[in-house]
Length: 380
Image (cartoon, rainbow, N blue to C red):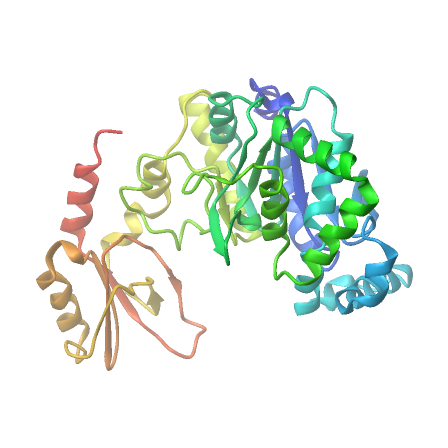
């Protein structure tokens, strides 16, 4: 199976960039090596520390940032701490904290430049994911084959900060060879040092590295081509299964655990064994496999993320809350109840256990309406 997924049409033309951090590397990276990266002929792993992971080189994405900036900006205190702990042989996992997040924004643009500059000429697509991203290789390759890499594409799940629409990094970013070449030409023509200095100054005052990537592409007249919900920032448990999703093939999910990375990869392999590598799977198939049987019963100590309507009445019992959902008609497909509160939801979401939380909900779904929704989407 692995041989097959390594040699799928188009696989050899994709460079996968996986971004992580030294403090989480040993928790999150191993699963990708036995799942995601078994299918990708070309990949490069970026972190905030140059090291080896078994026989794979981990590239330091912070290294290209100028000494001028590294010396004066507080975000890099963590970078120096990581290097010190590593030199002393300490457990970097114990350095976890918000400082790693502040450092993270500095990785994005340098990481793209390094990859664009050094990728073999035959690479047509660059795909960036993070260590808590699940990549659906089969769907991704089929999608990329439908597009022309000689068009300047910068693709991702759209987010907005100020007047910048950008591809959210954790959901995954896809860049065509043409777009990469245009960006690198602009950098070369401006003089790399001057160009990098300008964008370092911009990064210093921005919250997010993925927003800076968007601005760099925008500066060379390449706006974001929105690719949500194919590229997705939610997990299978938190995504809303609507008509916008149902007949669409997912490429990524975000905020996934190593267990989920493995589980979703196994689903892909099983799907290919039954349907072949040329048939995409849809959100519908994900729902039926992972969630369909779980939304047939009410669940205790469960938050199903119902949040469209909040009732002050109908809060005396879960039965009254469920009845309020029925009365709302098509505007309600699920509910959740805790004494004193009743929340209703118009879209199907599974949610998560709140057993270890301070507040406990009881959640339920209107099965008849889920069945009606399924029927209404039968065309795909």
